[in-house]
Amino acid sequence: MKREEKAAVIEELSNQFKTSRYFYITDHSTLNVEKTNSLRRLCFEKGIDLTVVKNSFIKKALERATEENNENYSELIDSLTGFSAVMFADSGNLPAKLIKEFRGDNEKPSVKAAFIDSAIFVGDNQLDTLTKIKSKQELLGELIGLLQSPMQTLVGSLQYGSNTIGGLLKTLEERG
Image (tube, rainbow, N blue to C red; front, top):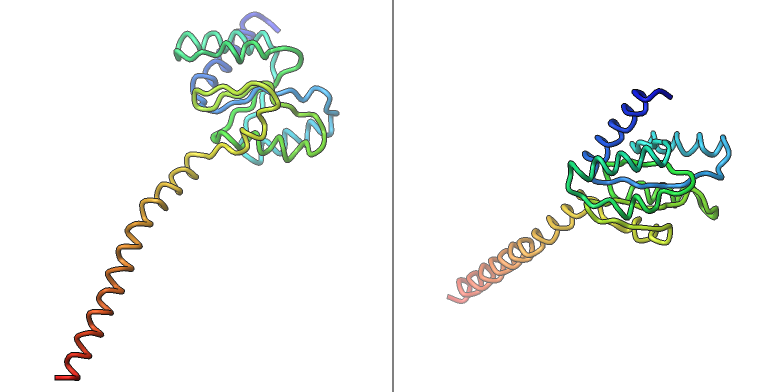
């Protein structure tokens, strides 16, 4: 690969790091070709961008993104050993759920590190935690539900109260 091609790969990867709020650094080195292709297909179907590049390219791209984004990616850089791939997603928990579902009882793919909206998770032991992270849509749904609950209670109480008052007036009218 020529120097210009390497620089273009690093620049593109750096731009992805700068614009993505959710990405994982993973290892799927022991997967055979068939399983690797299945993983790529599943990532494509779920809208996850799986990129396999050299650790040195990832490191340079993270360093460049650090300078421009003022994010501290040093813990991510420390995890760049052996074989690495990067998963970019629109949701913080989607890659973790995909990895957990895909690997079943196997060890790979494994999570080396994850960047979730400025929080860094290091190690495959974080996989269960990462699957439980709620997406923005889930949090908004819960918030709306919490905001609606008191209003529904109030409306229900007012309707019950009007029925009670109406019943009381009807009783008084019948007596009078």
